[in-house]
Image (cartoon, rainbow, N blue to C red):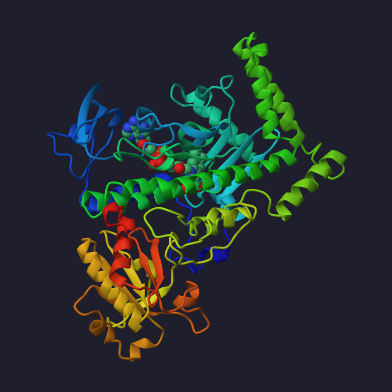
Length: 581
Ligand SMILES: Cc1cc2nc3c(=O)[nH]c(=O)nc-3n(C[C@H](O)[C@H](O)[C@H](O)COP(=O)(O)OP(=O)(O)OC[C@H]3O[C@@H](n4cnc5c(N)ncnc54)[C@H](O)[C@@H]3O)c2cc1C
């Protein structure tokens, strides 16, 4: 990461590398603060499941009923498998890449399968952490040497926490070859591989976990089924190579997109059809991120390919050994042949070959240099995609003639590093700018425009400038929101330096509505104003959804009938066909 990744210009939060299991614990703590309780199967009695997180329950069946769904689960209690049924109105399948929910409702995946098989080894070694911290600080280490190949992810150099990814080829190589389930000796297999990769014996390796996984690049054909009652999110809906770190980030975006829609539907604000907009909005993003991750994965593979270790060749060799031709040989011989061929391949990494005096080695080294000089290997930062993802259609009012963001993006090479350019078009995420609340204690720190959105309740936000036409539209919005039972807050953004002026006009202009906030831009004199940042004129207003995406944007003085237009907007956003004009 570069220093500018931490400068918080485009977001109030900087980029972070954070282990998933630690995030999981934080999420559980947060849920407990919100009144949920985490229960193990033995702690669960009775039939009140409200606000309970039932650990150890595995979904095994789904049946539609007149009222909703009947979901069967199994769990282990005192050494015995038991079953329990739940009745629910909505089931969100967030059960990962091998989703049972997805299979039970017969949703297929589309894309490329089995790109690569790997084993993940989670281990601790302060010895290695300290060495890297002082000699070669970094996050990802791609290690190619004649004895072994692997990718080392440094989760915490200080604590010496790592995850090692090792390619493996089944059925000749078996996960038991790496696993420490049965004997102490098998842990040593991993330790041996770590030793080969690191190049010297670490005194304190502690293997915590070993897990196999398969890399796919697939997206579910649909995200929603059973009359909007069964919904897929996260890896259950899409699974792609980890290159670029899109997997969980895309899943979190799914959940953020879906949460307010489910809540609005259950509270009666929105029609059940709003759930369809989840698929309309999120599936194209998953398709885009899938191809971006595949492209990035292939770029990462250009490094071993330049060294003469093309993974495509390794996979072809493996296919031949798996073919019927070779299946006549005993498995042990197949394994021996595979490992023999791979060790011949890895021998190309020896200093004997890979040196400037050897014509082949020198050619490979210069190819490698070119890849790195041109930034053509793995890319880790994708600001345009991480923050600039935008919905073309869904729970929003698209601008006429608006180009699809994908087509704009596809005009350039997908992996080209594109900066995030804040944009306030419908479908885009609300841009971040630091602001100060007016009329509040002057000691109050600046906060982000993103913090205007309430994190814990459904509330829409209308952002306006302090001008007559926009106040008029804000009053009409409040009136229509009340009619639709939709909580709405108005934010009036004043230019920097307005705290000295009389900003009481908002109260008078918005009478009788009280849910508004006056803020001023907390920008440096050289920075852009809010309206310049959003590429809007100050008589434009934007309506923001509870997930921080913009639903509607208009010129406040360009509407013939404010109330009629706002009814159209709220109807489209909430899926109320009956109000459509
Ligand atoms: C090596 C590697 C590196 C990665 N790096 C990144 C990265 O840098 N950034 C990033 O954003 N993403 C990354 N990812 C992807 C990320 O890990 C996944 O996208 C993410 O874990 C998906 O979250 P999820 O909650 O959808 O599924 P999971 O994390 O798989 O969670 C699914 C949960 O459902 C449970 N479950 C399974 N079946 C059932 C059932 N029948 N009933 C009930 N529960 C069930 C499981 O026990 C599990 O707890 C990486 C993935 C890999 C393999």
